[in-house]
Length: 117
Image (cartoon, rainbow, N blue to C red):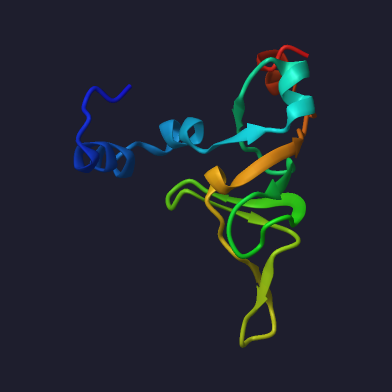
């Protein structure tokens, strides 16, 4: 997709991508079991997938994806929350490259078809 080696141009193209193309960029690697069954290395994240954090402060935590922010390239999980001053809880944003998908949400027929199940 990107035909340049310059990091600044790659970053510029990433930040200026339209939202419908950012979905493809927001992929996460699959666990070893899923990789064997699906025969793919990574898949775009969908709300409802179960993921495990592989990097950072929340390493090892697992939970369902509750929020996807295509504008800022972040996802939110149900197990990782912060309490706001108003009393409400908000998901802490995590970059999708730092998580691994452990279980796919396959209620969508189109997603089943593309994953070859």
